[in-house]
Image 1 (tube, helix red, strand yellow):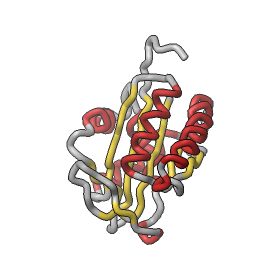
Image 2 (cartoon, rainbow, N blue to C red; image 1 turned 90 degrees about the vertical axis):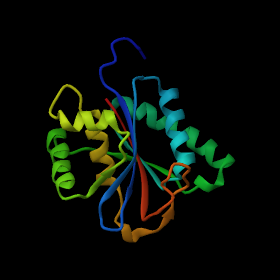
Image 3 (cartoon, rainbow, N blue to C red; image 1 turned 30 degrees about the horizontal axis):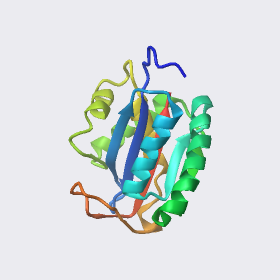
Length: 178
């Protein structure tokens, strides 16, 4: 896959549902590569760190290639790390227009239901300039938020070394690439 003239980013968004029904954005990681192996390695790194139940991945052309490679790598990872044996890859099929899906986020931020760390500068820039040239971050965020389960479906303690040692009802990784 060509590395020249990469305009779109591959975005990996990690989020958790809060007790009040909101969403905490743990990670919003932008990769400027279309190399499947690099993308899959980064996703596995987040799986080992956060131990999510699901990895939601958009099921379009390029993402199908990533999804297939990710499933193989995840199975190998599960054999070495039984703490992530429940993690599953789940495809997302988007039926609504991207613009409508992303606009839904505005209400969630206004209602105080979206919480993010201060170091998500790329995501913040894309959210503040939407609609603009780039929308990969907001697109990934919307899919992650939509896929998170309600807070009543289980309790996980996030494995963390970065000050996030709190309980979250659900933890999910969303992956989106354009």
